[in-house]
Length: 216
Picture 1 (cartoon, rainbow, N blue to C red):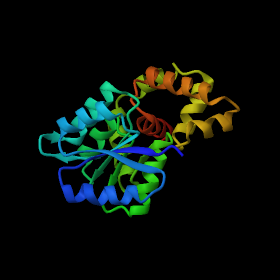
Picture 2 (cartoon, rainbow, N blue to C red):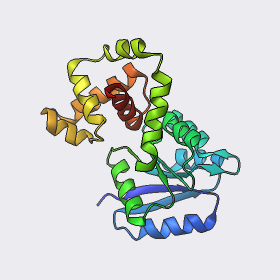
Picture 3 (tube, rainbow, N blue to C red):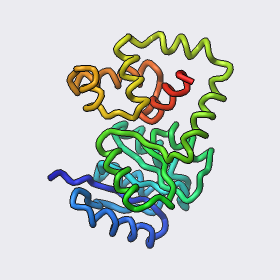
């Protein structure tokens, strides 16, 4: 069985110990590294190439958003879940723009956090339901005076790419999209890459939010 390799980033040792205990109790997960700062997180991520990084938003030498951005620039395939105590709009929006695949609050149930890690490792994106609406609103505000530009951007997509984008908005995995459209997973991956490039998007979470904003 392939275990999901995790990097835990939090400046509080007791939090890291709690998370490590939670994840290592799961037969399909393994904590392969820990970090307590932005710089340490960037170095460790490059050294061990984990499947998923659990990242605290607030770190002593910067923010988890900064770390996420640097890690994703070095490795666009890196999957980051931001874990925070506060539903901060600026940090939330910044996390998505930096390339995080998810943003969840620390008050989440342990089982839900484990499920979130499995989803992100499997190619899905996620946001805490309490904060999704605010991100969508922020996207709408940014696009309020840009409707024509958005229409021109969407027009770049082929008919099949638009179908894939619609399924991304439903948080479908590549496998699920392939099944729905009778395509191979490799073909779907190519479509997703083209969508990201044409729309200047960083990840599946941002693609889902873009699609929902256009739909609304």
